Length: 314
Ligand code: BDR
Ligand code: CA
Image (cartoon, rainbow, N blue to C red; front, side):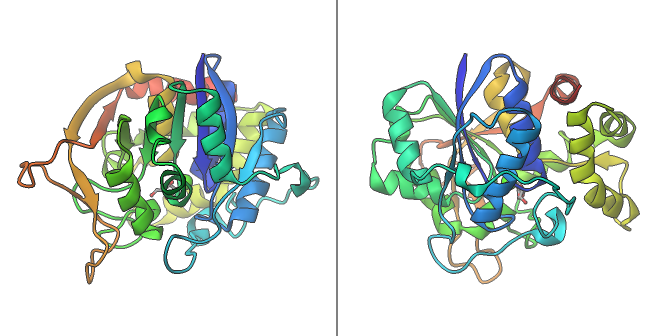
């Protein structure tokens, strides 16, 4: 069994990753830590509980973490994910926020890593504020993880939140920098933005079949994605390809055998750029003479990846 902790800012694609994690037979979700990102951290907790309820898994502990980045103020992504982060589909019977654990997410991360040394795959798909705080509180924390998988950053200077900044890194560049440079003694796999819109994009004729899965889970999944999918299909920039991000990070942790291409590189995060704050900068030519700190995942077996959505929703 793979022991997994998910760090989320539960918007739509975090939701997909959680659904995948809860339904993989080889994955045991030890906890879900929440952080502000797509929406504020309280709403993130609400969304996570909502998914756990649909999947009959309210036994999974949910922890509330940082509500603002290391510096500055919280910036959300509700224009994409919806005001509530999950496509603004009314929830007639929302689970109580009292189900959220009283322990802080960062304390929970440190404790879980001591209870399961060398065993936890930490899958981070949000601004990295909780992870940065964890390494400041305990520099040995990263070395107690089995692995860290991050969705975030970019490898060719292409952003989604700004021309050069990917959302998770741009929301908290200081935290991203602290994690990339401070997580010693642990392998970091990273799914950056660009492969999500190229090698990992899914043709809509295949994706539409997944959106039509008639189970309760399938209907919930397509309902929360309905608004953004319709918007995307109507957009001038529309291509026949569906893009998602966070589930790929979970896939790398749960099914490392589906990784088809990686590149090891040293990368850091721009903190001061006039137009490039939050950009991940990769030293492909080794000019800084630093050891690689990241394994960039560039390609997955997409047939297997698509099957994982089926497995989760059928
Ligand atoms: C990332 O930004 C968020 O909006 C998504 O949930 C994903 O984690 C993609 O850039
Ligand atoms: Ca996310």
